[in-house]
Amino acid sequence: MRLKGLFGIFAILLLIILSLLTYVSAHSTPWLFYTVEGFIVITTLFLILFYRKIVKPLHTIGSGMELLREQDFSSRLSPVGEAEADRVVNVFNRMMEQLKNERLRLREQNNFLDLLINASPMGVIITTLDEEVSQLNPMALKMMGIKLEDTLGKKISDIDSALATELMTIPRGESVTLRLNDSNIYKCTRSSFIDHGFQHPFFLVESLTDEVMKAEKKAYEKVIRMIAHEVNNTTAGITSTLDTVEQALSEEENMEEICQVMRVCTDRCFSMSRFITRFADVVRIPDPHLSLVNLNDLVLSCKRFMEGMCLDKNITIHLECVELPMVKLDTALFEQVLVNIIKNAAESIECDGKITVRTSLPVSLEVVDNGKGISKEIEMKLFSPFFSTKPDGQGIGLIFIREILSRHGCTFSLRTYSDGLTRFRILFPHP
Image 1 (spheres, rainbow, N blue to C red):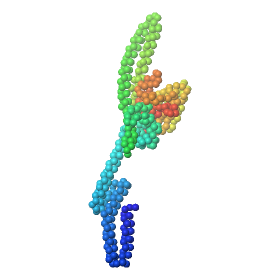
Image 2: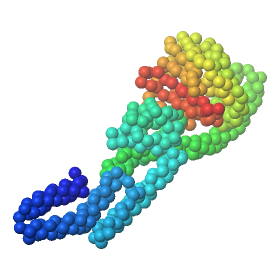
Image 3: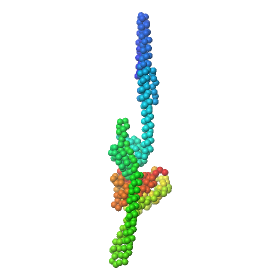
Image 4: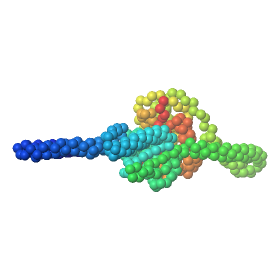
């Protein structure tokens, strides 16, 4: 019960007692009656004074406590006319003003921080103490290739994303550079901040893909041009000399075996020239000339082109297409990409297998094979220049695919999933 209520009950009980004394004294001696009446007047004045000096200030302070409990920092207490109580009221009002300003400042800072996180070119992932995702910015969603509703409330390890899987391997307080199966390279930092006395983990993900790819491309372009120049000049001189010597020796007797050796050497020179020319072709990839294309028709055309090679190995190509809008791409370049992907899938299967090519919405293309799969160690190196798992591989096929898909603005990934199937996924940009 509030203080004012208790005081009211006390005052009523006291007045009832004094009224009874007045009634008793009225039937007694006059001096007793006047004494009781005087006592009643003094008591009434004291109650009024007590209310103004004690009860009213305490009631005002109690109202202030209610404002604090309700966190209503915009309201203020009115002075009660008592010096000591008004001093407490003034202190309380100043405290409320400071709390209001502090709350406003924190709200503005939080709003600015939210805007900064959402606009950041770095991916930001904040988790709870149980390592469940509580907040992601748009860049983090883009990097992981997922939707917001598929992440909130889930642990990072449960999110279907290669980047999310790798983030959980980073030790606390450390930064690691990761190269993923979609050719992207990220600098990832795992740290924490203090909130309500507890450490909340968070991840910062910075994309290094463009910088690294530019540096890689600049390096291997220079190397390829230099090697191609030297090899082509050298082989041209050697083949010319071999031809001259072969013609001279062919006129002599018993020189057929030597001439045969000369022809083998000449063929080898031409083979070396063709070998280095393939590397040079990667450097000379033309810019795509985009036009509206029916992706399903393009897929069907590539399927028919590759069926002959696949049937020889008892590999079937199965199409699963849905109706799609027209897509902007360079038909010639994209045909080469798709042919390379299907060829790699067939080589992974070797013989007796199945390749599924499917299209879906939002506009995407997926090539699935049941080959021997890709290990985690190899997965991270797939799109590195000159890396190959094939004995006679040159390591330029996936570089060629990466360059063309990147120029089309596509996102892509290549990995073997838990069901044992290897999927090359390509997601086209929104029109």
